[in-house]
Image 1 (cartoon, rainbow, N blue to C red):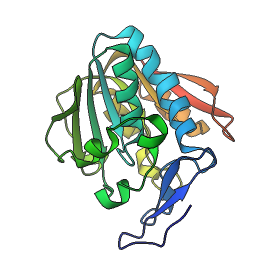
Image 2: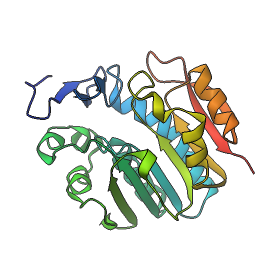
Image 3: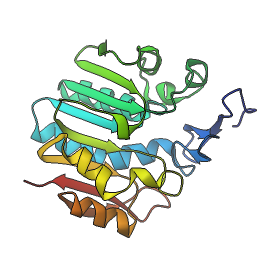
Image 4: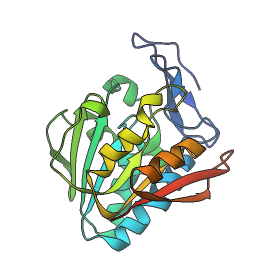
Length: 226
């Protein structure tokens, strides 16, 4: 499934597992793998990140680099509901999707969840509770400019690929993110390039390689040391 480019230049696309994604014209990238948006998020962020965080921490405090389509937030909300655990979720997004575009994404139907629309309808730059036990702050802007006094125990690092945004995969930016995390906090990302691993290690993370989703040999889980 595709649709003509709208005024943002974005296109809704259907990925190989039947879930939707968005092509972002501004950076010439898809928000999720075209080989399966849902299975990619499930593997990288939920299985490798959220599940161990739910076991390890009383309240899961999530930071997401790139709110994007809202898929990672929706999956997190659904799993936290099942586990009966509260989640405090913070996301930074430089390219917010218009609600009209978000309304054409099919994650809610696939997951049987009513919360995708409320997540996208939630106001920017103000913490709200779109679902019981799920606190959400969507901060508009660039990661480089983001400041916070919060401490997170789980980070979904879902920036666009290094080819499009090399400035978001440096040792300096990972040091910044590490400074917001508690020791023992978990960071997961789909990108396993060698220099990304080296930059994470230099920023104070221990790095693990894990099998990835379809067409992705390896993905990373990193643990904040100290």
